[in-house]
Structures are given as structure tokens and as C-alpha cells.
Length: 207
Image (cartoon, rainbow, N blue to C red; front, side, top):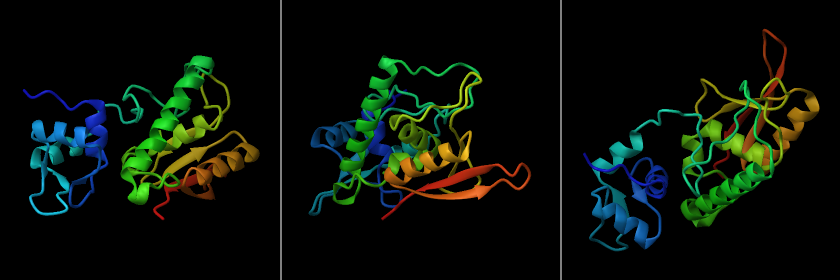
């Protein structure tokens, strides 16, 4: 059985154009994918790189733990999505990890977005909505709900490309909305019909 792609290679694969499979990355990254049979170089100018059928199959593989956010820099980091029973780690080491993860995500945006734009989410974020929104909130210093403490919770929704963000009060909800908007998300505030609780519906901005 072939070895699975590395975390860095998986990031490049996940960020491929969803229709054409066109890849963006460094020459070394693209050559490594070619050697593994996951990409090919088009023979005609501008000699762009594209996923092979094997590469497409890799991209379509669903992670076993969808709420574990792979850090774009290391592939190990997991964002706090909120709502866990265990207390969230908020110490200095965690703060450094979060900062590194956010910087790595900005670099992934620069590498994969058209014209290197870093002001809007990239393909990885659109494929990992809950984790991406949680990382944006945690990187901005918002506390997650954990171990009985109040804080944000990010959850998937039936709507395509949208997550629900819950916060303990209106002030915290507005603060989360401001952070997500600054991170390139479109945000609207809604009311849960049954509980009358306010929440945010956030989607990655495209332009």
C-alpha cells in the first residue's frame, strides 16, 4: 500500500481547484506529488500542474475526525471548537501554538488564493469550516466553551459553506462577529426559534 501524503502535500492537494484539479505550490512540493503519482505537469505552456485520478481520490478522502483542525504549518494542531467537557488549554504554550497555526493559515491563503490574497479564506478553510472559524476566533483571543466555562461554540450546519457560532451573551456574540468579519467571513445574526437564543451564521467570503 502506498504511503499517505505528508501533511504539507495534503494541504496542496486539498487546495487544488475543485473542478480542474489545478495545483498551486512550490516547485519542490509539486515535483514530490508527481513522483508519488498524485499530480502531473501539463505538456503545454504555461505547464501548470494538475491532480491525477489518484490525487483526486486523496482529496475526496474524508478525515476520520472532522473537528480536528490540521494546522496549515504542521498538520498537528487542533483548534478548540468549544463545548467540550475538558477544560481548554489556555496557557502560554497554547497561545504560541495558536499564533503559529494562524500565521500558517495566512501563508496558505497567500500560496493558494488568487493573487496571493490573505484577506479571505482559502480552499482548506472551505473544506474545514468548523475548524477554520474556530481557529480565527481562538487566534483573536476569544475563549472557547469548555469544562463548564462560558465561551464560543462553533458547529456545522445543514447549509453549504456555513457554520453556526454561539456565544454566552450579546456582547461576546458581537465580538465574535467582528473577529470573523475581519478574518474574511460573511456573518449574520439569527435567532433560534425554539430557544430564542441568538447565534451567528458565518460563511467564508469569496471576494
